[in-house]
Image (tube, rainbow, N blue to C red; front, side, top):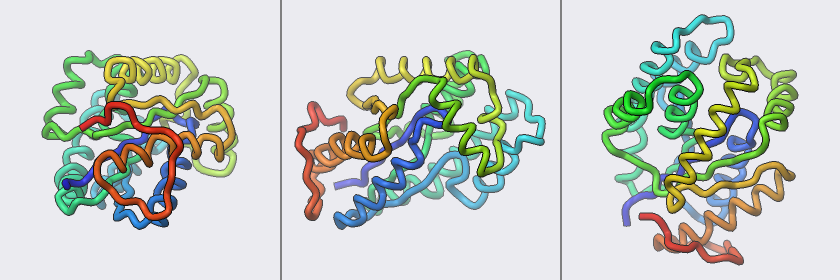
Length: 228
C-alpha cells in the first residue's frame, strides 16, 4: 500500500487548520503514521517564503505571489510530500494546489489555463486522493478571522475585502462540483466538535477503504466510491 495524501482547503476563517490539528491527534491515537504539513511553509525554505508572502507590511505584486507559491509547492512536493508518500505515510496538508486555483486564479484574476500550467509544473502531477473543503458564509469567516486577528498578527490574505474572499469561496465550490469524488464539502458553520464529527465520518471509512487498520476508531457511515 502506498501512502495517502489528504488536503484541507477553505477560505480564511473556515476552521480548516483547527480541524486538521484535531484530526491529526485523532489519527495518531488510532495508531496511524501521519505527516502534518502546510502550504506555504511546509519546508525550511517554504517557511522563509511564507514569512515574506504573508507579511501585511510587504507589498507583493500579484504575479510575484503566484510564482512564489509555485516555487514553494515545487520544493514541498519534492522534499517532503513525495518522500513521505513513498514511506507509506498518511500526509495531511493545510492547503495545496486547489488554493492556488482559488486564491491566485479566481481571487487575483489570473487565467485558469496559466494557473493550471504552473500547478502542473510545480506538482509534477501529484494530486491528493481526498480533499476536505471547509465551507461557511463569507460573513461568518470574516468574523472568525477578525477575532483571530485580535490575538495574532494579520496576514495579507486576511486583509483582503469580502469581494475577494467571495470569489475564492465560489472557486472552491466550483472545484468541488467539478471533482465530487475527490472533494468533500464539510459545513463548518457549527461548533468545532460538530465539524470534527463530520470530518471523522468522511475520513475513517475513507482510510479503511484504502486498507488502513485503525485501532479503536469507528464511523457510522460508509465512504461511497472511494477515490484512488
